[in-house]
Image (tube, rainbow, N blue to C red; front, side, top):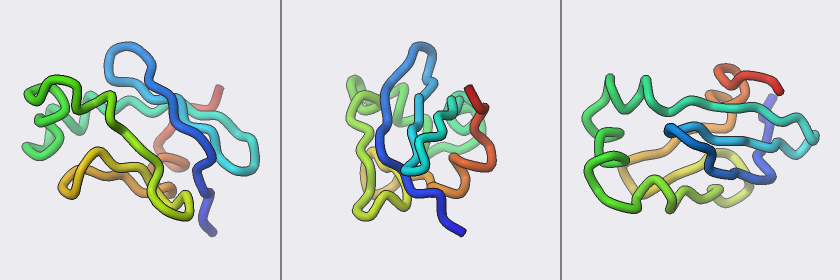
Length: 82
């Protein structure tokens, strides 16, 4: 099952507030990915890139550019319910 994304908002310290189409809201911390994967380091190294997050067509994920993205299932399974 896919938990499609309805909205994404930036929070402090590389956290995202994700609202899914079923109105559930979760916080997802991107910092561990920045520390682990070189492609995600661009979110720190390229000024303003983190703020450019957008929802992919159909709500199946979010992305910053062609190299940095997260699926809706990852955000659902690893996000912290609020």
